[in-house]
Length: 328
Image 1 (spheres, one colour):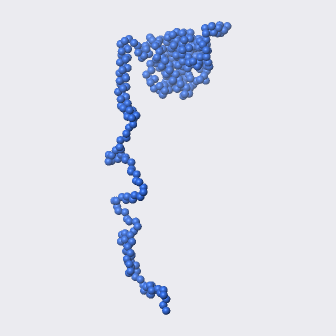
Image 2: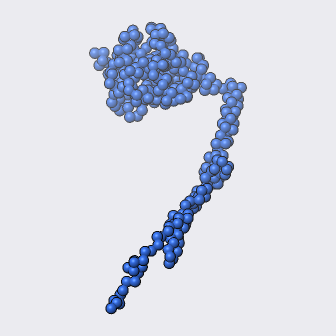
């Protein structure tokens, strides 16, 4: 008796199946069989040469447009940027700057021409007029090796103050700078670029090469010689040294080494100083400049010293009593 689940396939009945023929035709794979033909597409199609693939847009994501840039080949430009009011004003000022500068220059020339016609001396005429003052004052800038960079910058600043005071004075002194090439010119070039147009005397050599040894007085607070007046046939030298009293007596030592006479200003006879008796270079120059016009040491010293340096002003009786005690 045959089973209910009898296998009636061709293999069990002893019949062989014909071989399956596989044909590859590009993107279609054909399977031939007696009972069916199956067609199957490849999952990865071959790319087409010359056509750039474009990615499909992602659903739900908003595309961001690329920024507009200047294309050199096509000649397209970026859209113009809108300037602010301040930028427009600065651009307009830059455009008219040269014209305004030329206008101011012409106006200054016209004023100076009117002053010359009226007989009024201009500031440049006063500075270059040798008859304005025959008193020579020099700043000795040969102490470059004793100062650091910060002190050299302070020296250049004080020289600038001296020139400014001399320029604004109705009777300017004859200002000399010795040792000009000894690092001073480099420091002045950084702190004051317009120093090349100053109306001063510049010397690279020693003081004795310009003035006679018998006509030079070196000013130093360490000297015991008191200067009572300024002579027009002498040159008064101020030591260009900013060392905060590290090299005490350096100016006096240099004066003795060069065989020069030395002296000090009568500060102790006029005021009582609070602190050291060493003054800045521009303060010493201002005192000499003031005395050359007023001929009064007390007025010159009190008006030129900063108030922080003056502890009290001496009276005439105090000065006389101190002079008597020193003589005794």
